[in-house]
Image (tube, helix red, strand yellow):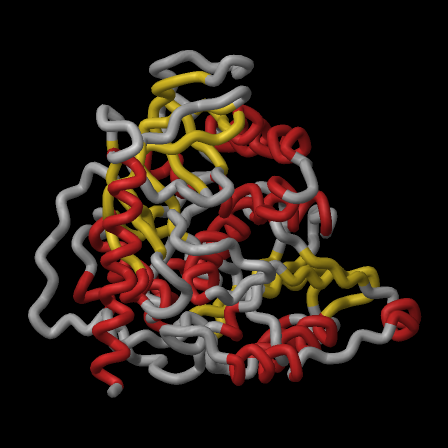
Length: 411
C-alpha cells in the first residue's frame, strides 16, 4: 500500500510537469520555452525538478531578464517545506533574486535598455532561464561585479544594512551579536560593521568555519557553546545589537543580552527547519520556547524589540523606493571596495537539491549560487540527497561536513 502511494505521488508530479509543458506549448504552438526549477508540491527535496516552462513576457513596468545566476537563501528551504505564512499554490518556480541581462521591456518600463547588466528582486520565479519583474525591483550591476556576485548581493546586503543602520542605528563604538556568522547575511553584517570605527562583532558559527571567517568577526563563538556566557566573558554588560535568525529559545537569550537602549531584531526562524519536510513538532517547539515579551519589562529595561522581513517590505508593504536608496549606498560602498559578496559555491539548476542540502548541512561559507549556464557535475555514487537532510541550525551532526565533498565548484 505504501509503495502504491509513492507511485501515485510520482505519477501526479509527472502529470503536473506534462501539463505545464502542454500548457506552455500546446496553447501557443510557436511559444518558446525555458528551463526552470519547479516545486511540484510542498515537502522534501524530491518535490524539486528542472522542467520546461513557457517563456515569460514583460507587461507594463516589467523588465525581462535573461538570467545568468540566482541566489539561494534559507527562506527558499522554508518555502519548499511550506513552512511560511500563506504559502502560494504549487506548482511554482521558487527564488527571490537573480542577475542577468535585460532582454525586453514592458510598455511603461523605463530606466533600462536591452543589454543592460542587472540584478533584481523577484516575487518568486527567479530560478529559471528568463524572468520578468517590475522595474522598481531591478538595479544595474557595476562593471567590475560578476553575475555570481550580483546574485549574492541584494538579499544579504540590503537585509544586513537595513537591520544595522535603519532599525538598530549602528554607530561608532557599538557591539553586535550575529548568529550564523558564516552565512551570507552573517558575512554581510560583518563587512558592514567594519565600515564603522570601533564596532565589536560577536558571531556564532560551526567550528569548522572559524578559520575561514576569523578575520571578519571580532569574537567567534562555537555554535554549540553557551554563547550568552561567552559574550559576557568579554562584555559583561552585553551588546548593543542582537541579530537573530534562529528564534525559539534564542529570543529570550538575545533580549537578555541587550544593554540599555539595545535593539534585538528577529529576521528569521531557522530553528523551525529540522528535517527534510515541515515538522509541526519543530514549529510548535520553536514558538513555545519564545519568551513571552512583556512591554512593561521592555519599558523598564530600556530595550527595543524589532522584526525585519525584506521580502514583505518589498512585495507587501511597497517600500521599493526605500530599498533602492539603500542599494545606492551599498553600491557606493562596493565601488569603494569596502564590501564584497562572498560566494560559497556555484551549482547548475539541475543541482538545486544538492545546493539545498549544503545549506541544511551548514556547509556553506557565504552565498550559494545557481549558475544557469553551468553544466551539472556527476554526483558521487553514495550521495543521499533524497533521504538525508539535517537542519541548518539543528544542534546534532555538528561534525558532519560531508556536504562539502559533494560541492561541484568552490570559489
